[in-house]
Image 1: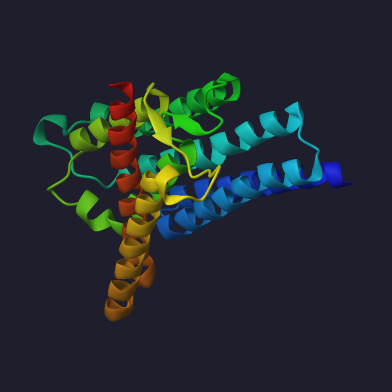
Image 2: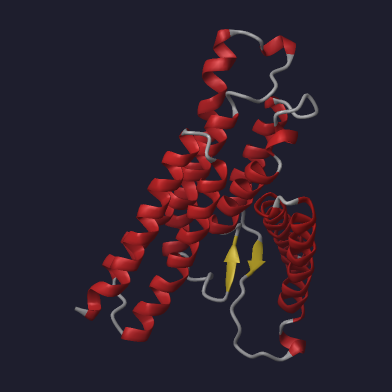
Length: 248
């Protein structure tokens, strides 16, 4: 029985991804974000459980990747697909071709997430660091951004061209050859983990600040969503900075 426990946890991740996708198509972005986060929790514990029980195997690895494609690829893509129907289009793009075509570019995120996961499965360099942006971080960033900053994204200050450019950048980050730090600790000494501890401290400050702001304005989930997006944005900046320095 114990050999099935990690796979059950992985399937919970998959179900969360399916629910998040359904919620996204119904424009229920806060619900979609919640289930993407819940899926990330299951994704964290399935591998840990498999190692603790000594039942790691190829089936678990493959099932985990399939679940991650849905939760961290398809679900955020569905959120972006829905956003394309409400975002501002420049005057030159006010025709049926662009209104029909552009929303489907959202699914580039799903395709590149699948590439990222396949690459991760065969890449022996990614035991202690990541090469490129991890799919859970990418999914949480988009889900939190669309939940917390939806009004801005739908305003005339943002338009479909900018959104598409950010999608392309996100796809590149997923498969780029830049090493990015992982929150895995061989030791807990400050000297060995300066970047990780600095990141965690700054994330704590961001989230606590947004929580306080949310309580004051009675929009806790909205503010926390913005805080989450900020934390992932911080991770991307710090990861790219440290990764490019390592290349030098």
